Length: 332
Image (cartoon, rainbow, N blue to C red):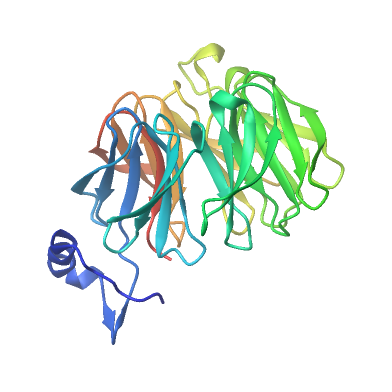
C-alpha cells in the first residue's frame, strides 16, 4: 500500500465525502478508485469517482493522449502530443510535478519492467524513443513505419513491439541487441496491443480491417485472428482500437470504434462471445483491479461508459471532456 499524500484541498474534500470507499490504515491509505481520463481535444484530465461521477477536471497540456502509471503507481505520465512533452502527475494530489520536454509528438507508451525506461511512440517522427524518466534523457531511438502508435514491452523487458498504422507493420525491437529485429506484416492500420498473461501471444487491433491479429511471440509469426461484426453495422464501420485481456487469459475486450460496441472474446477459442453497446466511437479501455468493471472512452460522444463485466451491461455513461482517449484507474 503506497503512502497517502493528499496535498490538494479539493482531493481532501473528495476523500472526506467518499470516506466509506476509502478506508485508512495508519499513515497509508487504500487506492482511491478514481479513474483518470485524458481528453484529447479538451486539453484536460477528467477524474471519475468510484460511484461514477465526474468529480474534477484538471487543465493539462496540449492534446493529451496516452497515459501510464509509474512502477509504484504513485505518479502517472501523460503524452502531450502537441507540446512535444510528457507531463508527470502525482497520483494522490493530481498535481503536476514535472515535464519531460523534447519528446516529439508522443502518442502512447509502455513502461519497461525496470520502472525507469519509458518506450514512446513518436507519431510525427516515425520513431520509437526510449526515455529515462528520472533524468529525461533520450537513451535510444528506433525508426519505424509512418504513424507509430501502440507500444508493448514483453514481461522480461527484452522485446518491444510498436504498431505502425500507415505501414501495416508491427516492428519488433530487441533492447538488448539495440536493433529492430523484425517487421511483421499485419492487417490494415494496426493500433494497440495486449499480451496474453503467459506472454505467448500478442493481440494487435487492425482498425481498418475490422479484426484483431494474433502474433506468436516466440516465432514472431501471425497465428490467427478474430473478426467482428455487430448486428446492424457494416464491415467498414467496425474499427477496433484498444483491447484488454483478463488476468486469467480467458476473456478479451475489444473497443470497436465507430461500431459503438465493445466485443467480448473467448481468448482460447478466439471467438466472439457477445457485443456490448456503449457510446460513439469506443476507443480506450481500462479494467478495474478486480475486473468487475470495464471503462470505455467514447471519442465522439465525449463520455465514458462503465460496463459490468458479469452481466455485460452498461452501468452508466459519464460525460467528460472533449474526445476522451485513454484511461487509468487508481485501484491497485
